[in-house]
Image 1: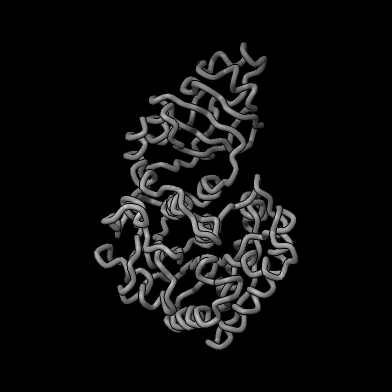
Image 2 (image 1 turned 30 degrees about the vertical axis):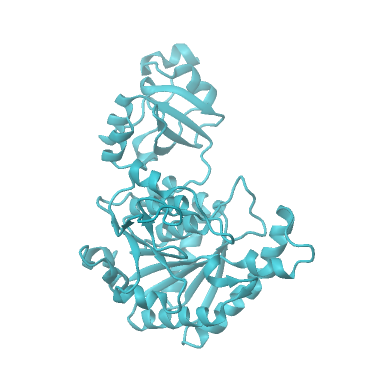
Length: 390
């Protein structure tokens, strides 16, 4: 049960960090690493905050960046290509975990390292195994420390940033709250670095096209996760029924300040029922194999809880096979859902815009009536936001 979702007061969102039973905390590279060196005092302060949370009976999972940033300083010639980056990650990961281990131990906590790739969460069996491992650790009051396995990940199939990984871990363990600690105060209505007087947005209840537009695409010099990546992570978290916060963690004791309401943050509050566990798994697909462009009628039908039929598809993009995950996109270019296709892409091109009863004549066999069955389809944009995209 997600205890934090039941007890948190939306009028005082900082209390969510006190009341949430299960919390995922993501630590960005810019917080951990400075000039290629670990900020050890900052890390000790974080460990103290986590120790206080454990004393309150809260379960904590850490998602950390920083391995490449630490390892690159020990790599002769620096990082020039993917192989160098993976080598830097291999060097930095062992140093990073050892630092976490020592800091947590000083506050009575045991850490456990878990390195994940998208395959570990998108393959159903590996997904369940990863969840079982994490549950076993949490039940023993151990702090899982998660990072992407950058030593083997490659650009076409990687989380890409640890904001998304944190949201994915939140889904994996049904977290009440996901906290993204970074070097920004949260979301603004414009880039505060270039627009004087940009207004801070304290609470967001839905990821609308307007919210996405405000996110821009700025990142930090060390990390890969700009505000757009954080908003994408928020969409995953809200879909799972989790609260999320983007907070500035630059100062020591940032979690304590956030708990007291002394730190500026943007809080994302779920406003609808969470997706089922299976649909959360589908929605979190990192790299869908293709895209189905659909008309307004199809979008309305999907939001009414119906399956996707061929008659509502106007165009097919990419190559995919039956059972592959595909995006469902409006004609205006807004991604609406992700689902598992019942047909290969070449077959969908033939039956797109056609009625079900024509399948046998067009394909030579009578397959499933639906392109994507509703049980295998996860809506990723709220109905109100979808209407804005029509």
